[in-house]
Length: 243
Image (spheres, rainbow, N blue to C red):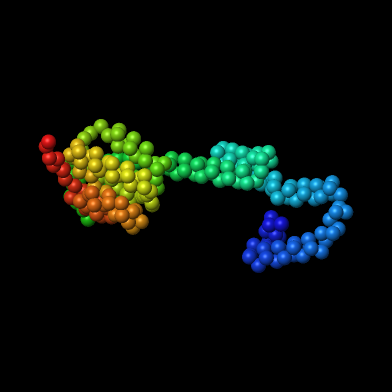
């Protein structure tokens, strides 16, 4: 009923109510006659309705053009619908789609070190001061959630030099979750033990609010929403008490 209604342009709530009322009235009036309809006739009607709902041509085009992961999810959901029931198929399809989405999001996140030219390109043109020595600048590009934390930690582990200060730009991080926040906290605390000062900068309002509520913003001397120029200008080694 819903597919037929939408196919004929019934997209509003009123159309859904009218369709339901019409179906209810039809059942009440014609129900006594339903016992006289042969089951083979009902099967043929259901087969035609199912075929029209399947949009076979569109499915074929999707299989040819869509990514393999999407095609696999669609075929698994279709198979479960046929061999089990619709509830199981929908739940499994949604879970698989969520996992596939998280995989794609994590692969789209990039953590890398910026060279001197890239850092200079992100500073205001009026800033003619040279970049201080011993400062390593990293940028996180993409949503920083639990699926991307491992990549972030691996990128920092591949640092072959021990800087005096580490600046992490969050300019291109649209949002961050609890796992990402904890990863930043661990990096800050571990770096402090090695005498490396960590500065976070360029965070948007949403990310800044989360870091402040989690107490991470208080672990760094520069506001996490500060521009990169300020983070570079204030970055300095942290003295670690002996013993």
